[in-house]
Image (cartoon, rainbow, N blue to C red; front, side, top):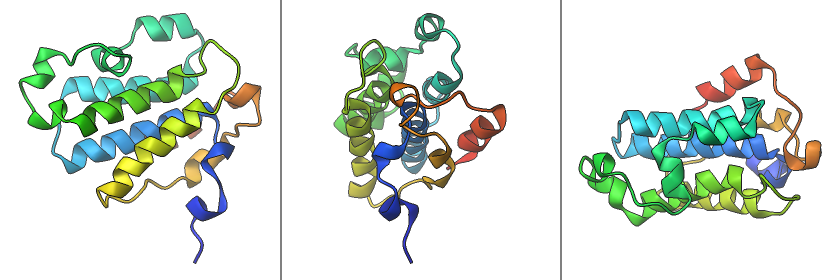
Amino acid sequence: MTTPWEVEPLECLSISACQALGAVAFRRWCARHDLVHAELDAFVEHAFSLAEAPDLVAWERDMPALVAVGLGDDLPEELAGVYEDCRSQIFLALVQHVTEIGYANMYCGRTPAPWRHLHAVLAILDEEGMGRPDVTPFLVSSSSERDGWGEPLAPEVMAVWREVR
């Protein structure tokens, strides 16, 4: 049986869909490693909210601390002191790649960077034998629209995306 991963290349997904799929993958990795923290939840929700953000400046201004880590800042002490896994290179790479999915093309023309970062996130899951999230719900948002960002999404679509584990 052919899976959606084999039929649809990731590059057909909008950047918004890639960002949400990256958030799902990050949440899955954290669950596998028993990482639970409000800052991790805020990071995931912020990644999802990019697809709904009517104002990118406001969206950026409300970024949680882990987004700053993904852009090069140090890990906040509250996380570094709680979980050893939060200091691991794999965790930090996931944070960086999930962050860069959304930020890579934010203020420039379309480049392959968001999809490259999503591939990197999924490769981490593959390396740990975790399995990839179901891509099917994300296929509704195409990279062929709005310079890769996809069309605005209905709240029902976002609700489905948030439920993917």
